[in-house]
Length: 191
Ligand SMILES: [Zn+2]
Image (cartoon, rainbow, N blue to C red; front, top):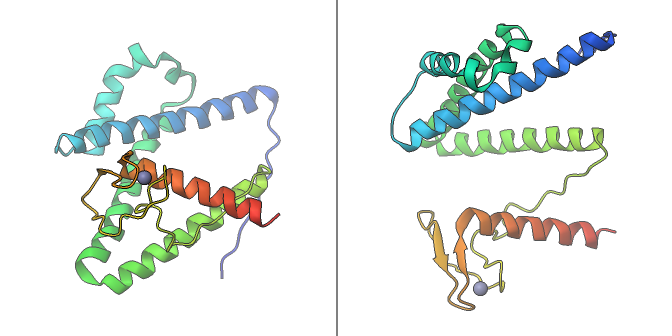
């Protein structure tokens, strides 16, 4: 059984400012480290979280002097958080691709369901909404400009030209636009 505890904090104004700074700093450091890690990966190099931290510490004084406004534990912890996030990500990918494709599907369905649950929860919290789109919706294969379907699109084709309307399509951007349009259509249809 899972239990959740809610702890209510009653910070003074100064404390609240500090919390916000600390949260902003944590987010910044995590995003910085992830972006650098992806730079290295794009260059087919591996970098450890420790080396990333060293790199960060070398430049932070000059480039991010506000980092000293909050305890250095905040920045340090984000490197272990990123390390753990990456390890989990690759463990899931590894389980799926090497060991058992059915398990991989279950894991990815479960994590997608969890992501959907959290997004819905947070959207409600902020007064927004989440519209899910059917996973069989042909978001990648459909040309966002004219709606033509390229049935033989392979995973390795990152970009292609629509043979119907001649639009030059970039795979991820085209899929994102199709998903956005489909979500808007569903939202409109349900009202
Ligand atoms: Zn087209």
